Image (cartoon, rainbow, N blue to C red):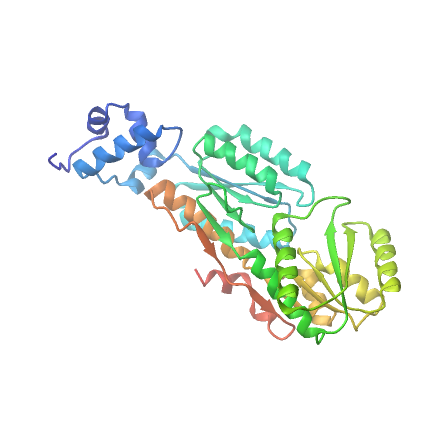
Length: 361
């Protein structure tokens, strides 16, 4: 077929035997289109050499490319606040192309809260072009992913990956490796001596996040690889219940005087750190995750020996960028995009910040 620079959407629609609306949805990767129609439209576009000016079209139509970020509630200085910072930075860079991002939040320790946020998202489906998903509740995230797949809405995972799903991309660290690094840092600080307190911090009788489960798996994997025979003292600590936490921890340290190290697997390391500070337990070596303000204070004061960080700013930024490039230019990113796992100590944490992380883009 002869290539023609003046080819129009109506010509492609006629040659592919589909509607003009179907051609437009294929070009912009929006809406529901059958695999057969996608194949036929793209085949005709290739044959005639059609290259749409997607930037011009998006500006001319003035229809926003609407993305939704489904992430936990946050306060200034929180882990998810850093994620939102990266999202907004990307939104600023892409707003001239019509990209807008709405943020839906949920309680990161409540599956019910996540499901309620998902319901709100599903009510918006007709106006949503892409979704960034914080993958804290694995089974609920899988159900959401199936819903988005059925409606051909692309989505990106952040925080932790769920490999078997049809996500456009994942931006984050290798969570299992993050757990292994936590174990390595803790054993080194303990000089490979003593028992370890494992604190599962959650809302009362909740469940570990996808991220927490993978880190815990990696932590145990490293202990096994090292042949380190250690007594793991596992306790459940509850967000917002200091009396319960003190009772549980007092009992754990009383019944297990050999405890020399402690670890948590989410950003709430400060809950255990505050207890160690209150009881003046300087001898306990604590390793946690994420550079949030309460954790930094304890790191600086010596009650936390190391924090494992994962550049949430860059995760949020790249999530918006990947969806924008797909929707505007039909450019697909690499599916798994692993970011560095950073080890932060009292001596180097001050050099780790949002701006320097985004300079790595």
